[in-house]
Image (cartoon, rainbow, N blue to C red; front, side):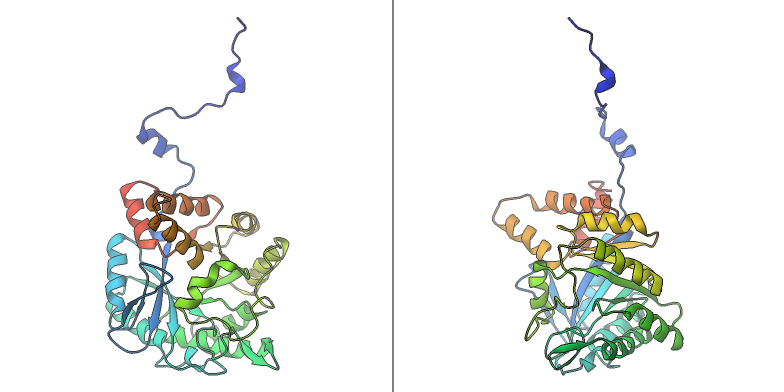
Length: 330
């Protein structure tokens, strides 16, 4: 009998759970989780979103319940999206002092001083046409849009946002927003740039939740072609050069290679957004009895961190925080 050559066999950790955890390569913390919240005007609103089971529209007087629950689970970071009662061509509700997001920012800053508040700075939820910028002759006017995005960012910072997250994908918007924030005295407000945002089919449930589907055309002229990776690296490098403090890749499930590529070229903190369609797919498959929701939630989250993310924006944030505390994915 020939001698066995053990040098050609990789060793696996055939040890107890404690040692496996000690040798774990990818570690995550509940402090790296960000929970999206959809904010409406009015009062007494807590309505479940049909396309996103377990997620709700909140008004300023009801959102505290969701925030308190997240804080209790260990997730203390929140990304706010606003839904105005009235929309117009320029999306003026985005920078209105009494807008939905502004009112909630002030409320949460007062009631939950330990929470870190991130505001989505875009116009699509506020415009009557559903596009992310000023539309002239059927096209987005990039430069005019920058002016309105900057007004929005300053308005959110004034209301109490710690971090501004521009999601519009306009050219040079990070530099414009940085200049606007600094000029208004908000040098300490950070920018989390949606640096790499693809024109994706995974956004469907969000567009119902945010009531932001385009009234005509699509967003492919300013969101990215999902065939492209090198473009993503250029976009991320450009936003970093313009002064972004953190970068984001969106979506995650089909873009882990992109996330890993951006991670390899930047030392900035890197976020990934596990978007509404990804969440809805897991929820729907679990409701049909096809998968173990908890197991798949944990596995997909770890895949995002393994690819290089420092932060995860997820509709499962409170559940993931509890899973981390239990030691299931920590």
